[in-house]
Length: 528
Image (cartoon, rainbow, N blue to C red; front, side, top):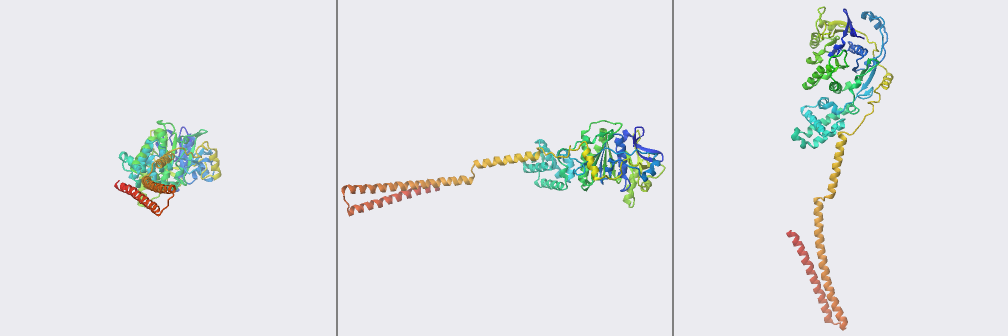
C-alpha cells in the first residue's frame, strides 16, 4: 500500500507500520530467505506498493506465481484473521496493469537484443569463453565495426568469425594472432547456445527499454518475465537480466534524487548473476549498481542468503527484508551470522537467533530513514497482497497479452541486411569474378596442349607439302613421256623401261624429300 505521508507500506511490527520512503527507494534493496519462507509474496507486496505509487516494476516469474498480480485479490480466512494485526478493516483488493514478456516468445511478448547490443563482454560470459577466445571475439567485433557490418543475430556473428578466420593474416599484425582453432571453439560455443534456444533472443526488433517505464491509469505497469523455461539456462537468464540493467544504465538520462524512482528492477535468484563471473565483470556490475540510482532506477535482489551477493555490492543495498534461514551445518551458521551482521542491531532481541526462528510470512526488516541511514532492525509481519496470490490460467494470460499496448510490436521478427548478407554477397561476387578470369586465361596444361598441337600441325603440313611436291614432279615426268610416245606413235620396250626408271627415280626423290623435311623439324624441336 502507498500513501504520500508514510511511503510504501510493506510490513508491520510492534511499533507500527514499516514503509519504504519514496525518495530512498532507489537506494536498492535485498529480499533474502530460505525456500518456502515467503520471499515471492514479499516481492509481490513491494511491487504492488510501487505500482500504486505510479512506479513501474520489472520482475522475473520463476514458477508462474507472480502472474496473479494481474488479477484482483479476494478475502480469505487467513487474510481476515490478519487484518487486526495491520490495523485494517476493509482492504481494497485490486489488480495491477501487467505486461507479460518471454525471451522465447511463448508466454508473453518476445524480448530480443542484437549481438551488437549484447557486446563482446557479456557475450563472452554467456558463451563461457576463456581469455584467448574472449580476445578473438573482441577482435571480431572491432573488425565488424571498422567495416560497418551489423551484427544482429547468431548467423551474423558466425559469418563474421568465418571471415576473420579466412583473413587472419591481414589482421594479425594489427590485432594479434587469430588462430583457426580458437575461432572453431567459439563457433562450437555458439552452436551449443543455439541448441539451447538462445537464437530466439538475438534478433530484431530489439527490445525498447522505455517500454518498461510505462504507467496506465496512474499505476505503474508491472513487466513480468516468464522465466520458468529460461531458468533452465542459468547463464542465459543472468546475462539477459544483466544486459537489461546495462541498457537501462546506458540509455537513461541523469535525474538525481527523485521523490519516487522511475523504475524498480527485481533480480530474482540473484546468486546466478555472480556464479562463474570474472572479477572484471563483477566490478562492472558494482559500478552499474552504484551509478544507476542516479538514473532513477532501484535494484532489489532476491536470493536465499546475503552471502550470495559480493560484499561490495551488498553494502549498497539499503532496504532489507530477511526471511528465515536454517542453520543445520557450520556453513549455514556462518551464513546466518553474516546475515545478522548486515543489520543495525536491535537491543530487544538477538538478530542471529531471530533469523532462525522466523515463521512463514515473518521477516527482519530494516529500511533507510529520511537521512539515508539504515533503521534499527525490526521483527515484523509482511503485509498480504491485494492482488491474487498464485498463477493465472492460460486463457487469462492470452487475453492480457492481446490487450497489451505493445501487442504486435515485437511478435514478428525482422531480418534486414546485416553482416551475413553482406559477406555472403561479397563471397559470391569474388567467386564469379574468379570464374570469369579462369575462363579467359588458359591454364598451363591448356597452353602446353595448344603449343604441342601447333608443332604437330607444322610437321604434318610440311610432310604433306613434300609428298605433294614429289608426286607432282613424278606425275609430270610420267605424263610428259606418255605424251611424247603418243605423238611419235612409238611404244618400245626400251621406252617402257625408261618410263619405269623415271617413276622409280621420282619416287626415290619424293622419299628423300619427305625424310629431309621430317629430319629438319625433329632436329629443330630437339635443339629448342
